Image (cartoon, rainbow, N blue to C red; front, side):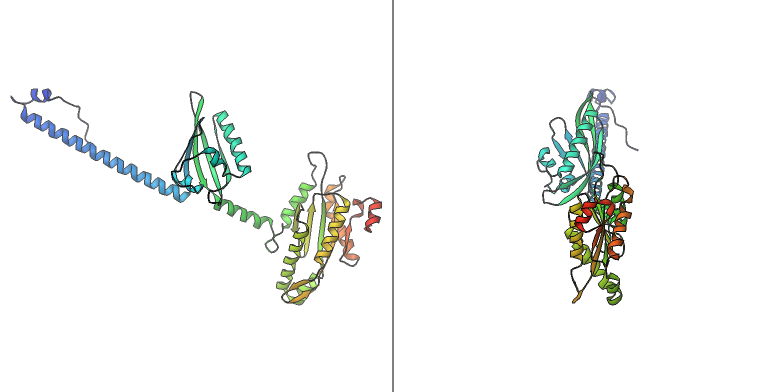
Length: 354
């Protein structure tokens, strides 16, 4: 237990409580005072050491977790950061901070969202949380999670403060998980699940009351024979090459996907009939060109079935395109067909698609 602090005393008090000259009692009290001072000095030293140790633990934990503390005074926007926040932005620790320059490290979308949330929090005397995309002073791209609270005095906001945490690895892991869930590992194209979601969106009414888009389904002609003759490794290389060709032609498409073994699909936002017919022919030409794989020149073809979204029956989009594909394959392959109900009779005759 700590020694209680003794109240100050005067030499006169010491003398009055001592003998005739008061010397004995005075010496005793002086020694007691020195002991108290020494004890208090020791206590201060211990508390200082404990505080320094706690600060050291906090700093190490902060660095390990990549979490830093920041504050910004209002309305002058003067910033104060702990070391980790400097590290997050790849800035020298202790460097002078200018808020406008710091916001310049945020991507355009993140900077816009930061200002929106910050302004609202200050106006409402609340706080906010957001994930921000930044480009550091060394050109590194990083994701940080910002937590902020507004402090007020007499109803007036005086500062905003909180924490910034590096969440780059978490973001990359989530993106990788999302890609595994939504994209075909072999070809890099969207998988059937993501494609179906895109189809559902395309069939919904747009804000202006219109529906947009067209669907093209592609099937590789002769793929089974190559797979059976040369094995799955060669077959897989054919699929990868076909996917790259498809991506090259359909770079502006809403979505390109692998929806089956050797079946692909493309969803475009355009509804012009001539555009859809031209794109379908380009796909047939590109995917029917020879495939150079493992020193062999292999021959494949492509059949394409296309359909425009019918405003009266949007849910039939896939079935209409599939019916057109069936017709293209039955006509010998390496051809395309656009579902006849998607074209006016004169357009069908002009393209030879009816």
